[in-house]
Length: 328
Image (cartoon, rainbow, N blue to C red; front, side, top):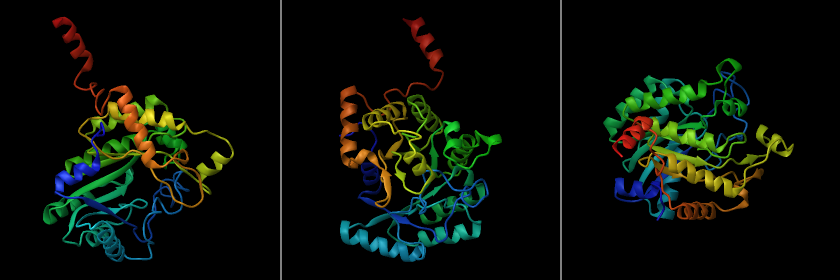
């Protein structure tokens, strides 16, 4: 058994059976650091589909995508419960009226148990959250906002072009904190996406990222291994030898270290990412995801450790240590 709180068993325990996420691709999606609002070109690692390489084309309506994907999961996995997953680009980056229309289209099924909405921290707004909170109550749905936090190293956030100018180098960290707090106040859940092998990030950045999302009370975490796609700015730098990836063993060690410092109540949706099939320059050290997962499990065993084993840094740690010594 894994030494971390795994998503699939959590879903089954909550809903009484297996639940499947249905990816949806919003028509005409974009991001504020693609269209010039806060930047251009997008994040240096993001390919043209906006991480939607597993989705149906956006020429199909949300409803058409839902019906086709649902039928596939029913045939292949005999699925009966689903989560609508608005996955590509920034799914709150539109007018409130358009957002409401898209979400309602994604929520129109009696077998739906939840909605997951992927977005950027700087595109979270109270009016949108209030609509979702009302929908959660009226439809009895779990609603989760998935935030691309990536890292708390704001120097690296500038480097990967998250859409921040020289005068606002820490805005993404600030926006991430603000977004989580606003989402929690509305009674919705939050997933933090983090990349554990960004060039320039160290083990200290990995640990601090785990601490920050634990302090914020994030509900879920998705861990990603950075992949490199040809034609992206990251791809050009990779081909030019501007950086090298950490080893697979170091990634495994970073995952376990991250989980050791993470709140043990946070559910882990993913341990390693997947890349598109076409035009890949680097992905997962040419190793299948399940072998990487096995290596992570083996590292936990080697350390005799588990998720949350180092989650001891809150509630005045120094004072607790002093009082403990005095009692001794």
